[in-house]
Length: 329
Image (cartoon, rainbow, N blue to C red; front, side, top):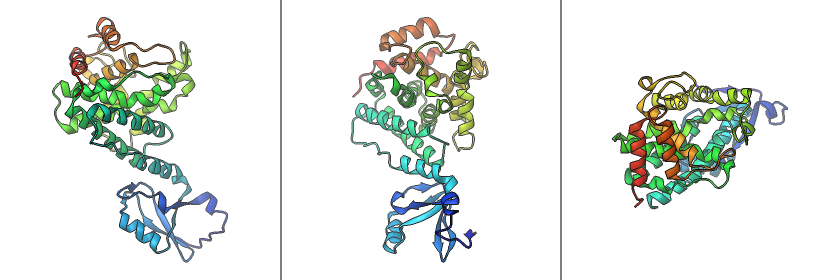
């Protein structure tokens, strides 16, 4: 049904509070907007496109050709519109690159994606871009599992928050493939879950995340809340059950010593156990505010002697070693 707002005056003060302009040049060919856009027809605002509308170049060119340079949108949708524009303007990953070079590009795009992700709610535009990135990761892993060797530690710990999730996604996907999960949908769900696994940290101040020293009790409580906060953020999305399990339970441990639910091995999905190992491994091999990065060998040795069987899966650990032993093609 067409939605109309009557007695609309461009000069009325309410325009600055109820509606704002959205320029047509901000729309991208073959993209989908997840907010309503209106046109002004004889001082009436009429709904032109609703949530889920797909744009084509011919339509956009036609609108401009007929003198339509902008739409109106509700001011409350400004954040959705901003995220839509940022997500659709992130570059695509060239399939002509070798998998190891492509993985480097995915890391860069993924870091920017995560920074945008931390700015607000998870919109359909965000999920679509995450699905695209997850697909890029799966493509690389299917072509060459050894491409994860091109992932290197960070020189500046401040970047860790934004690069971490995409790297965990790559490691988890490679481990899963090495363990025999061959379904593209299964691999993509693991990749997606890992991309979103730390999204709840957007509710935690960076001063706490990057604190150089032990956390105080109230800071630790806030940090431990991020899996629950993350599940809240993705609750209204179409993300698969596996993705949700990774978000809420990636800090659980096989012996029940993890959080937030103190689950044991028998209650944890294999995909969650894989993501947990990937999360720990990337943390150990990255420079962070409170620790120097370890080499691959040092990280694997630490996991073997301190965490194997009690915290992380033996099968996933063996698969990670096998992936890292393969030379990138």
